[in-house]
Image (cartoon, rainbow, N blue to C red):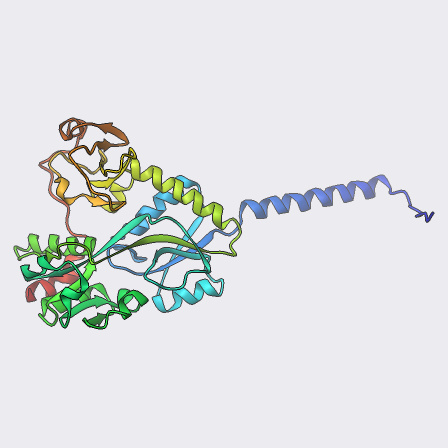
Length: 341
């Protein structure tokens, strides 16, 4: 049998090796503790996503979610032209405001929709209130942002004369200048413009009878990202909890949200004592799951359920006399548009 002649190590040599191994292990622990955060990107989207201090619902919301979930995430806002390629080449680990409108997403792990997007046709003309389907807009000029127009879902709608715009402001200006009688935009964006218009004593926008398309914001991470599925699962669980206990209301600047909290198939109303006032109308509630409310809907304030609106209002502490909030759209930027209205 082969033998190996070993030379005994001196005490000083063994001590040196022991210290070296210990130092190496310590360095590995330090590197693990200070590992680079997961980087997620998105393109700027007025009132939703921003990197220059403007109101940004999604930024505020996800910062709260990631903190509560204990996830180390870095958010980066970049031009849309670079976003997809940055994910494909590994410069980004994924997107934090992914909108699924028919693109190939086979290389991504998608979260549940954390904020639905309801796309309505809006107009100065009340006739839009009879619009229920895209064919009802046939041969009409409809303003739309490029982020929606340049997707498989909308490229197939050939019967509509799309007036494409690079930004939200440009799309709204199409209506203001009467260059397009209709605009396809998100419900929340149209609401913000209506706040500006109402505060300026202008006639507000009319909405189509129902949303013409539905999608939503999702987290999307590369399939080859280590622990990507675990990250998405943690995110989904945290979102579900925060939606139910009212922690979504504040970041979204929405006093009432709706979701089926108790699992009976009917949506319930969700408020939070930090933002919801007794006078806030239930008609402005924004749906988180697309389910309808009913007379049997319950009311949840800070996660606690109430059988009636009066009981829920009794728990609210904000003063009804406080001024209504201003629009998330910048009034100075939109002043020229308002003058053209």
